Image 1 (tube, helix red, strand yellow):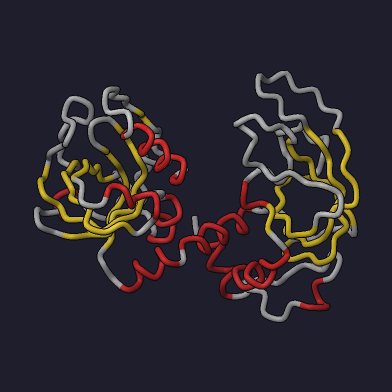
Image 2 (cartoon, rainbow, N blue to C red):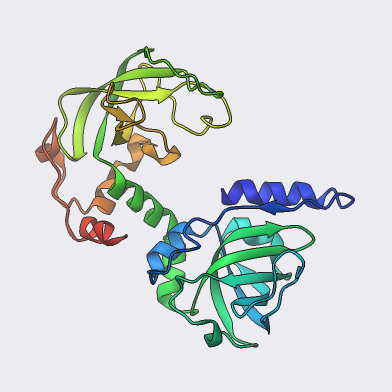
Length: 292
């Protein structure tokens, strides 16, 4: 979403005669639980260093009303590509209720790392999220953000296997939705099981549709090799098929096997993880389970 938002914002900036307001729902904005650094890094799609310039203020008061938890912040350095174009600008920042800091802990002149999601884009930008100090731990977490995101996806997966596609066929499932997914089923010959228990072959249902809703979901073809992060279908296809891989991260190239084993905490992979043998999570795997 961060890359999409960056491209969208750039396109709007090239059309100054038309002011367009984009409201984006914030995932978890209403959550009142204290957030961990890992969770904030994972969920933020704009991360930058900045300085608080004004308290209880807004760069767009008619849209984002000033409050005790709103601030005008000057962005000094982008820490993710999605924030590059906003460097040097003043934006409105809203501190989420679930933050570990109270609103009065942010004072004019204070500098922080801001871990946010876009809230409003109009004549200015408004974001909401959390803040963290400029510490080695914070910068290391930001640098390792891709690993943290994949580790979270691995934690959410019911089964992780490597293998190859031996067959693809249409999947007979009636779907009356406007953006029909065009379900197909791929048969996977399993080479290794990295999480869970797997038979020697299994079926994965996936959307072949190129509709914008499904365009980022992995597509599979006979002969394709890689690593699948699989989810039980549950209500999606009403129990008619065992697994899906719908998220962009749910399929990884074979070259990522070492990285995936590291994130799962598998220390002595080879022969012991062939064809259905469950992986035993080590320290990293336990840390993944701790990300709530």
